[in-house]
Every structure is written in C-alpha cells, then in structure tokens.
Length: 589
Image (cartoon, rainbow, N blue to C red; front, top):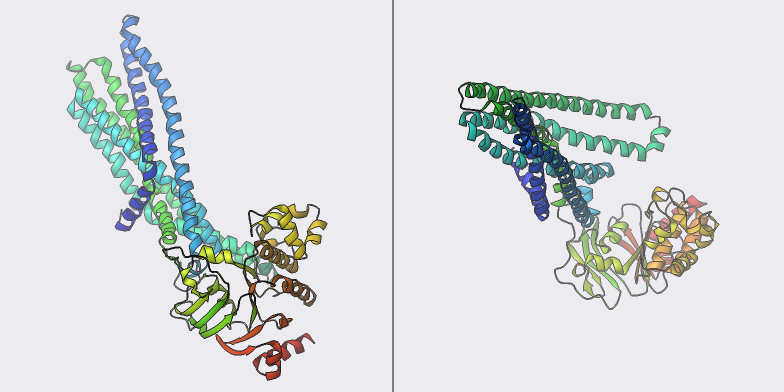
C-alpha cells in the first residue's frame, strides 16, 4: 500500500476504536469457528483411521465425542461470529453516516458549492448521494474482510504451525511457508493488480449515479429538446466502461482464487509426501497420517477471504478518501468559542461591507452601508446579479464577510452562533424547499413543538387553510418531491405559513413572488403586509409592486447603493428606480 492508502486505512481503523471490544470478540469467535472446523476434520480423520484397526469402542469414545462437539461448536460459533461481526459493521456504518451528516451540515451551502472542484461547480446531488450511500456502504469491506480475517488467519497459522511442528518441524515449516504465500503473497499480488481498477470503479460509479440523477431531474427538458438518444449514448458509454472494469475485476478474482487453491493443494500434497516416510520409518503412527493432511487442508479456510479483501481495498480506500474529503473540509463559517447572549433588540446595520464569493472573483458588494430599524421594513431592489440575495445569505451566515461589519442588535453578527441566528430569523425564499411528505409535516418543520391548532392558525393567516381542507386528505396530503403537486402560489403560501409559525423577530423575504402570475403575486403581497407587522423585515425583490409597505427602499446596481428613499421620493427623483418602474409597467401594459 502506498502512503496515502496506508494513511487512509489507519484513519478507518481509528473509527473502529470505540468498538474494539466487540471486534476482539468477533476475532475470537472467528478463530473458534475455524478451529472447530480444523479439529472436526482432524478428529474425523483420526477416528476413521483408528476404527479401521477394529479397536474396542471405548478406545474411540473420546474421538466420537470430539467429532460431535466440534461439529456442533462449528455451527454455534459460526452463528455467533456472524452475529457479532455484523453488529460491529452496522454500528460503525451508523456512526459513520451520522458523523458524515454532522460534517456536511455546517458546509452548506458555501463549501458544498466549491470544495470538490476548483472551478466552483461543486458537488452535484448525484455525487453527494453516492458518497453518503455507496461510499459508506463500501466501508463495510474494511471491517468484515480486512481487519478480522487477517487476525484470525494469524492465530490459526501460529496454532497449526505449533501443532504440526510437534510431530515434525519440517512439516511445520512447509505449512507456514505455503500459508504465508496464500495469506500474504496472493493478497499483495491481488492488491497490486486491482487497486487502480478499484479506485476507478468507485469514481465511475459516482459519475454514473450523477449522470442518472441529472437526467431524471432534467427529463422534461431532455424530451423537449429531443436529446433522449444523445443522453442515452452518454449513459451507455459510462456503463460500457464500468462493465469493462468489472470484467477485469472478475478476471483478477479468478486468478487469486486459483492461486489460493494452488497453495492449498500444494501444502496438502507436500504434507502427505513428508509424512509418508515418517510413517514407514515408524516415527509417526499410521493413524495420524490422514489427521495431519486434513489439518493442513482445513486450515487454509482462514486464507480464503484475504485475497478478496485486498482486491477490494483499492475501491474501499478510494471511497474512504471521498468521505474524508468532505470531513476534512473546514466550514466557511465558524462559530465563536464562547456563547454570547442573544440580542435584546433586533435592528440590523451594514457598515462599509464588501464581499466576494471567492478570491479570484470580482466583489459582489462594494462599501455597502444601511440600517434596518427594529420592527421596520427595508426593501432592496435591483436587477439580477446586483447582489440582493447575497445580502440575505450573509445575514443568515451561509457565507462569512471579511471586510466591513454586519451588526445585529448593535453587536457584530460574527459574534453569534449560526444556530442562534437561524432561530432569530424566518425566511420566505423564491425557491422554498418542500419535503416529500405531508403538508402538515412541511409546516411543522418551522416549529416541531407547535400544536396542530397553531399550525392551522398559521395556515389560515397565510390564506392556505381552505385550499388544504379542500384536498381529500387535508393536511395529511403528500406534496411530492419539492412540492411537485402544488402550484407556485400554494408553495409560497406554505412558506409564509412556516414563517408565521416560527414567529421569529427578523423576517427575510427573498424574491417571494418570483415566477408567480400577477393575480397570485398581489394576493401573496397582501398576505405579506400582515406578516411583516411587528417584525424587522428585509424585502429583496426585482419586482417593483406594492413597495409602499417598505419604510425605505435601497436600489442596488453592481453591488452598490445607487439610490435610497421611500417609494414616493424615488419616483419624484426620476432616477434609476423611476426608470426600472416605468420599464416594468410598460412591459406589463
């Protein structure tokens, strides 16, 4: 194994440290299982050989009892071995999945968008899904096949070597040499032949899953533009390459299986050839000849799993690297070490703020300064790309600002934990995510402690209750993936109901009426007028409709405040806002 593979493998071993007691028990049970199998064949061989001499039954009683005991013991210990070893694996995989999720959560969304690739395209949903499911599942090979079997094989090798050496040292040497060739030589050869293929298999599987997920998500567009055959050819190309690599892996499996059987049979024949002269010379009782030969033959059961384990080591370590790539990524935002008290007031202030997403990109915001007094509403308008939504992301601490200040209640925003900030803010976004569950559960995500009556009250205030009640299953109606079965207006009203249910003191409305028709937009805005009462509100929009609800309007252009004032003042000035307003209303007319 090269250095990176070794380092990755050692990190995997550290993950198993809390379960080392169960792992030791699994190794012991594995040894007892194989030991009973060896003893069963050896005792049976002795019993048959001794019985051929027609001794008294009493002389065979111990061997008869031994055959029965070892036969029963082999089955019992095999069951216990599988039970304990799989318990270890399932506990570890469970711990890894939770550990991985806890590592992913702080990375969203900033690091997940950019850490995987230098071009800023980030992780696709298919690749992330492959890491969480397939790569985690691949780690079970480490604990079932790589850790336990070598330790069992080591104990078996020492025990059988000492046992054979007691009869003849040369037989013991022949056994240990051939056993090492089968348990060390063949696995190392297998690893050399397969590790690159295994790594490519993991990467290619992830690419295939990514492609499939992308095609399913974009199926309407693929069909609309007649690209079915083109996309099918891309999937076929990936599948063909995957099949070729899997075929190569199967060939390596055949080679390692043949070599293991070769050394098993070689050890058996050499033992027989060395033991026959001992019997003819009288140095070894004839009844022990078959026992020694079958002892050697059955002991190679411990060698059988090792080549396959090392064959999969390349794919396993590659899967682990992909997981550790996420684990080792530092969050864009770090919480303060000391937990500060929550603010006593909820005004927001930006002071000389400048921000860029990556060092090699131009700034998105320049010297931005404004204040949102407590319980007031400030609207931020501008064309697409002006930096409006970036302000919301910075307030939620999805990204960290490096220049300037953002104050919440007079204190620097970076002084608060992300968890506390999110408790203080409700968001109604243009792309509100609805989970593939019931309407009730989608509303309840805003406040898991809310009673059903409170949820219904919030739905009534958001003017969505009557629609929900008109559905056959009411609040228990499934909304489909990402709210597929609901219209845009219905999804936005559910988002508003969430905000009402959470009742946080700060409200961020990020393009809440985008992609809605004019009638639905007016209805949503009428609901929002009620929602913003008693909240510190930032309304981000490029739609200049009903903005008289805002105490102040900021007009952004290229990340800077080009104009500010009330809607009446901005219209009287006939500046950028006036131009945007006229342009939008001409389009509407």
